[in-house]
Image 1 (cartoon, rainbow, N blue to C red):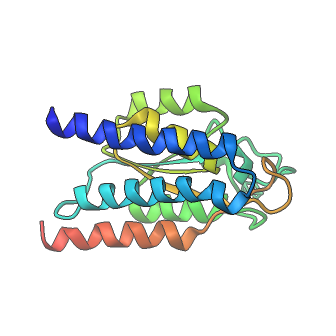
Image 2 (cartoon, helix red, strand yellow):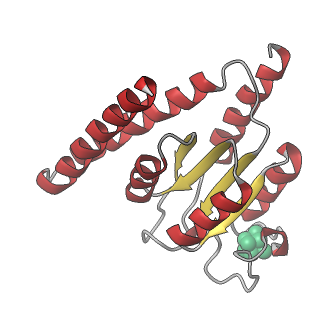
Length: 182
Ligand code: SF4
């Protein structure tokens, strides 16, 4: 209980500082600072939790804007509908899914993401999202273990965004190493 309360207090501090930064600072780099610090703190907390064992059920949550805007295949209902054509990173995500046995959901919004989490009950969530969605999502779901990864905005914020597959795979590899020490 004490751990929960102190953790919630720290998360609330970061979240409030983030909101104030967004509200009152004009400089984008300074505005990003608190979000980056929050993510760094959160991800370290998650890595520390899984230092000595591998979570049994890992879910990867992605925003719909990762999918190529012109793709005709409906991957929000089932990511397996992707044909791996290479026009976006969904094909590479499918490869990660197969390799590491992940539950993967491409969600069109917070409600669907929450439903997915409720249904799958993952021990660990890897969430990819933009700064605003990631910070609020991590704050809202505390004390769940959510490892956050920013998606990359190429031209416009919610269309054809990108993500760093290596960043996700490096994290998964670091978890797998725990198998040897658990
Ligand atoms: S990789 Fe998959 S989701 Fe992306 S454009 Fe090709 S078929 Fe569509």
